[in-house]
Length: 399
Image 1 (spheres, rainbow, N blue to C red):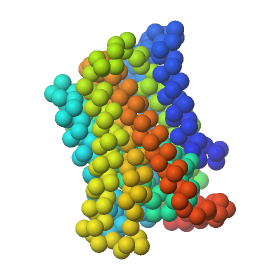
Image 2: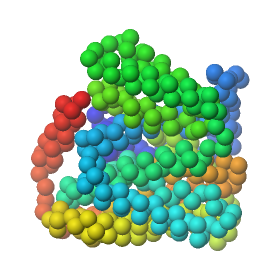
Image 3: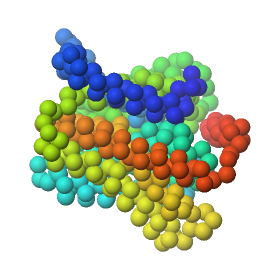
Image 4: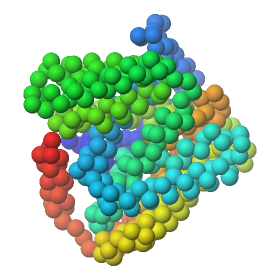
């Protein structure tokens, strides 16, 4: 299953699933698909009564956020963000890539769509890195490192937005018990370090994870936060083992299913000029806001921190990173659903805005980086594969 870990494959699966969802929703099967998405089981599961679509966004998507959190922990402890000096420039660039799109969105969407301002602030790690891997093989390694670090920080900010801005009421009892579940998960992870391969421990970890997810879902906070918390506290040994096993599931099933479900909206039968300001705000804020915000903040950060010239990411490379940063997709689609959960028509137009803005960013980024890539010397593919293998060995040895 190593092929499914390839960022190019992951990006193609995401795009294909989203296109398929959009096509099916606007075909003769659209009404049936919509009914299936909103269907509920005839019984509740542990008191949770969720639609099929919400079992995807509140249930399966937890796997994706769990894997992302493991990557976050690695980057902050051993990777590209493991020191203040390493993390400073990507953090500044990410903040610029959040602030400018949010401001653009506010100015275009107006008061009616104000709740959706976090939507264009996200960057999709899998999609962005997939495009870069496809068209930017000759680019310097620090370009990929900056994009990865920036996307990781961007996801962390998006997770905070979900937890803070999209929580209406909180059951403190459930949340407190969930916190105890996270502590128990951490303790089991530490025990696992010395007893790798112990099936009773694996079953116990899974059981505690499911119970913690249920408690978070019942608390009123979005259930994906459970995946983030559990991934961040899990000790390196079991975390790396879990990532190895869950990454194919996340890339091959969870993300494509989420993309299919979220993108399966009926395109409004109205002239393009009559689409709501929410649609246009996202379409502009993702490609333009990210381009301006990341490029300007990245340049300012490198200058202010006096990064040595030979270590800097040059302006032309920053532009390419910024264009890919406009691929919002996964987290943007999720925040669109959360922001507009009481207005179905805004969910539809917001979804179309995310898909359109992300597609514009992906196409512009791919064209720009293809041209830029040709200005660099050719690279040894075998050397790149050896580097990636060495990085993987370092991850395993580090646990």
